[in-house]
Amino acid sequence: MTTARRPSMTRSAATAVTTALSALALLWIIALLARDDPSLTGAPLGMAAWWGTAVTLVLQSVALLWGRHQVTATLGCVAGLCLVLAAVFPSGLFTVTALPVLVGAFLAGLTGAWRDVCRWALASGVLVSTAHFVNGSADGRTGGWGLVMQALLQAALVVGLPLLPASVIAAQRATRAAQQETLAAVTRERDAKIGEAIALERAAMARELHDIAAHHLSGISLMASVVARQTASAPGEAHSGALEIRKQSNAILDDLRRLVGLLRDVGHQDEGVKTLATLPHLIATARLTGAQVDFDLRSDERRKPGAGVSLLGQLIDVLTARERDILLLLAQGMSNEQIAGALVVEVTTVKSHLARMLPKLGVQSRLQAAVWAYQNRVVTVDDAPR
Image 1 (tube, rainbow, N blue to C red):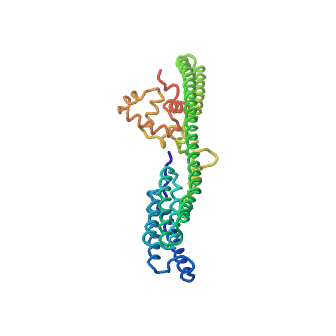
Image 2 (cartoon, one colour):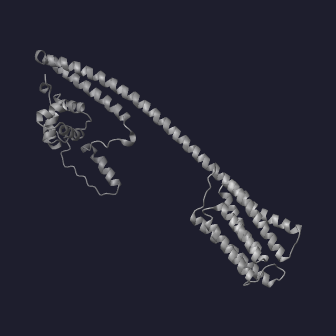
Image 3 (cartoon, rainbow, N blue to C red):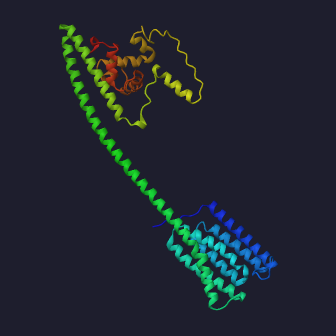
């Protein structure tokens, strides 16, 4: 099924105005030439036939403007006005009315609605040939079969000829639209296959993540049990076991970060935690926007920021008092419910504090927060519950 293409209001207006001005200019030139050369057929300027032809040309142009809504029917309307002029004001100026008909036939052919175009083109050809026959008979220039042949030739040239280039342009448009639709369908199919492949790959990564986490956590749990029994009888071995637990914890955290980074959608990544280490990047980004940013770090370059200050002392400026309490209890292996009971607060309150605390520590889970506390000696093995 072919969808008719309707011209825009601006294009229809431009076509109508251009057609009217061109036809009226041609009408004026013919009238002037006919006045100076009586051998030319045409009504003198200002005669009734001249004004009737001028009004007909204007009405035909208005019909072309209206044809924005029904292009094929407009062709019949424009051709019908030719017949009216031939019946009321027959003259040698009648041939000028062929210009709007030619434009209407071309516009109708551009729509690509060939069923309607063929029907209205046939009707318009009959109207144009009849008008030409009536005008020629009234003028008395030619009679009989000669006039009939002229009328048929006039209809073929005025109505049929513009349809040829218009049909080629319409076919090219239809081909281009079909190619674009095919390309869009291929693109959608490709995107769907890519999405399916990504989903399968992520599922495989998730299974791998589960296997890695289960392996490391089972080893950590076993070593923690051994360390708990050796703290009193063999402190040295218990210390070595604690270091091994720390090593295993770092390994699992590295694997988790690697796999979670692959699973995370590139278009929806978290911005990350803003720390002192990210300040140069943030300042450079702000300066790219044209903002005036001054950065003055006043500290001893020979030591790192925070050197000589205990972890608990550094946490005072980072975590709130309630968040520090929750971190200590979390590192001791308490659940959210146990922490809420120890602090006499609601479980939802504990969860809210955790959601704000984890980004401050640069971690993403309760397990990472507990490991962070042990690694930085905020909590020691002796503080862990036995």
